[in-house]
Image (cartoon, rainbow, N blue to C red; front, side, top):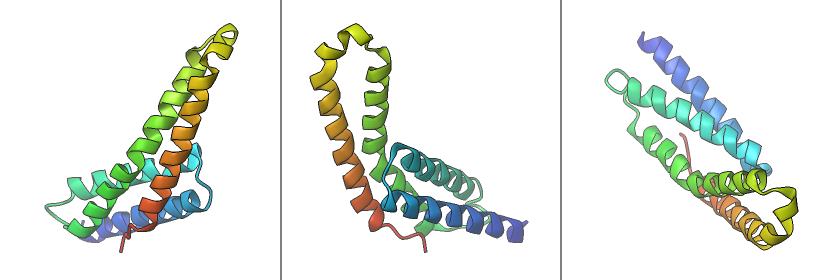
Amino acid sequence: MMKWLRKQIKEERRTLVRARRRFLHNPSEESLHHVRTSSRRLRSLLEDSGDIVSEPALLRAVKRTAKSTDPARDAAVIRALLERVVAPAERTHAAELLRDLRLQEELAMRRACKKLARVSYD
């Protein structure tokens, strides 16, 4: 069991490292999503197997990943939601708000990149 858990953790860590690399190379909503989903899988695995396989440093790094990407994801979700609910006839009235949300999202993505560049999963 221990060998299997270590292998799973290693594979999930590798997946997160690749997702992070893609996000740092090309920050987008999709690459951000991959970082967040792979970090959630790894975090769940680490928390659920903590009594058997303890990796506190890796768990802290995974938690920092979530904290670093939360604002970017929130901004992307809010912008996408507003774009979906605003009727085409109302777009001109919402244009300034949408533009501000896009700028906030870009800024949050840049901040996430800077923070994730400093996170190590070793």
